[in-house]
Image (cartoon, rainbow, N blue to C red; front, side, top):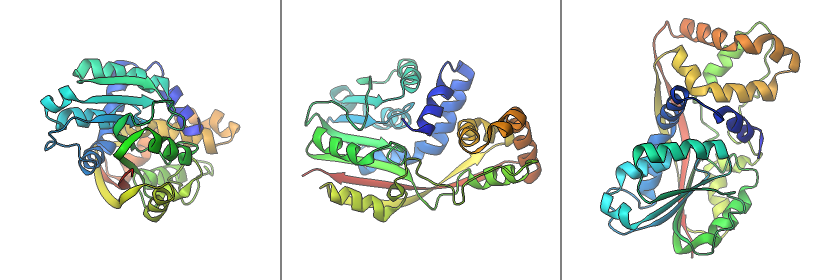
Length: 293
């Protein structure tokens, strides 16, 4: 588990209902539309009539699963099977509440390490990893395991952040530049936190899938707009990322002196920057689909 995964683990532990709702809404605002697009490219959409057996790996709090439940015909869901797997247990605890509250059909939750799933060979018609291969420490192991657990001709669909992504980065940079000390930030901001930069590049994604023997590879770059209502909304959306940046790049002295006032400083800066109005963030993401032999 890398630093970002550990931050998510601690951040989501013991979350109350109000903050849980904010987390799910912000996740869906960023990842929801791309999740629907990824499912459509994998052949799981409103037009599907055949049952499927899906593993949503590195599922986090279930953005893709939520979209699937809304899109796919109820009769098809009744005949299908979905497993949502992740290694971060607090995420799965949140997901279990979500499944129960929203009445998801034929969906199970399991602690699964995408690098070593230990699931039976040929178990699934589809495997999805929506925003995981740029974070998981050893993505090559994930590809090997995915090949093993997919049925012949099975579909693998994945998404990652593009190296050209802006998203929240410009506003983080301007906020940190306005702080009363030199706050360290990497430049450029890495879109992979596992050291495998190929997963933020369309050519690198295609090369990796080819090396592992996948067929019918399709890789594309998409753009997605997220509206931010206010400075407070921005912080609600990206509080976890702020925590990760502070814990990764600030010195102990900086954290002791300034971490407690960061929320106020950020919100004040963004209100001034955008004249108290809302604004849009532009996300650039990579979607890829492929098949086993």
